[in-house]
Length: 482
Image (cartoon, rainbow, N blue to C red; front, side, top):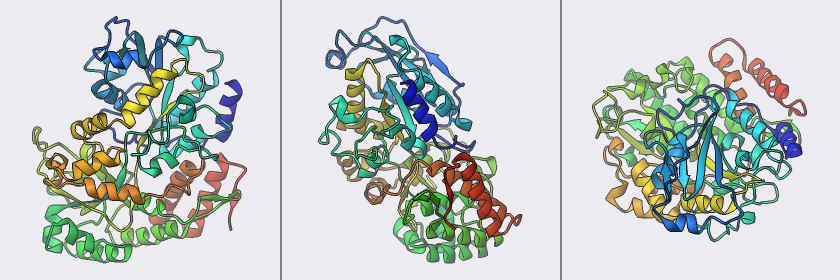
C-alpha cells in the first residue's frame, strides 16, 4: 500500500478551498474536530440478526474503520443501517457496534484539504497497519473522487471484487456511477444520493415581478441564459438581485461543458465557462449579483424573509439543510420556515455534491463493507427511509418515482411542492463524461481568478493568465491551450 499511497499523492488534485462544503450536510456537519477517532467497547449485539449473520465471518476483522469528514454518513448509518447500535445516540461520530464488530468513524475536517491529507496518510500506511487500524471504508466527494478511484492508485476496491453486481446497482443513476469509475470502466464506489439540482426561487418575488409563483410559469422566465438575463433586468427594475453571488450559477455552466478541462495535457476553458464569465460580469456591473463567497453571511442573507434575492441554485440538500428552518420547527424568520421557496429546472440541468462510499483495498471486513454498501445505497426500504426522514434525493429510480406520485414527496419548505419528479428527470440528464482528476483545481482556480476581473482589478486576459498559473503551480505537467 505504500506504493499505492505515493501514487495517490502523485495523482492527487489540489486540496479543497475553504468554501468547499460536504454535500447534503446539516448545519452541524462541518463542526467536527480534526481527526477524531471514536470507538466503543459496548458489547450489545444487533437487533437485526441478518445484518451480522450475513456479513460476518470467522476470519474477518472485529473493528470497522470508516474515514469521513463530518457527521452526515455516521448519522445515516445510525438512523438507517439495520443492526447498527450507536455508542452515543446524540453523537453518531462516536461509532458503535454491528453485531460483535466495533465501528469507528475517523473524522477529519474537510476545510483546507485536511481530510484528503489525512486519508492519504492512512491509505499509504494501509499495508503495514495492524489489523484493527486498517481503513475499511472511506467517503469521497465528486470534486476529488477521480483521485481515489484511479486504477493506478488502486486504493478503492472495484465493487465487482466485493461481489456487487451491475444488477445490484441497476436502480441507480448512471452519472453517480461514472464519477467513481476508473479508466477501465470499473465502478469503485457507490452513493445513496442523487444530487441533481435546479433553480430555487423566492415565491413572493416571483408573484410580484413575474405575476406568478407557479413553477411552470417561473421556468418560462428562466428557461435559458438569454431569458434568465432578461428576467434579471426585470428584477433590477423592482430593486431585487437576481442571484446572491456569481458563484451561485457557476456549477450550472461548468456542468455543461462540451469537453474536459484538461485535454492532451492542455488546460482548456470551455465556451460555456467563458459564457459564465461574460454573463456574470454584466450582472455584477449592473448590481444584479455580487462577488461574495458562497456560505458567507452576506450570501445567506437572502434566506431570511422577506429577502432581496430572487433565486439560488442547488439540489435537495441545499433546500433542506442550508436555506433555513423547516416550517415544522420554531420560527427563525427564514423564508423556508414560511414555505416561501419554489423549485424549477432553470436554464440548464446540472448536479451539485454527493458523497460516495469506497471500500479500501486491504480491508479485513469485506463482507460487512459489501453489506453496508448494498443496504445504504441500493435497498428500496432504506432508500425511502432516508428520503422521507432526511429529505435526501436518493440514488434510486424506483423510490423517486414512488415519492413523485405521492404526498410523501411534498416539501413544506417549497410550499408543499413535490420536487421529486423534477429531480429524477434532472438526474437522468447529468453527464459526467468530461470529468478528470484535475477538475477540483480548475474549478476552484477559475472562479477565484475571475473574481479579480469581476471586481475590476484585472482584465479578462490578466485573470485568465492567473488561472493558468494557479493550476500549473499544482500541476506542473500541464500547459495552457492557448
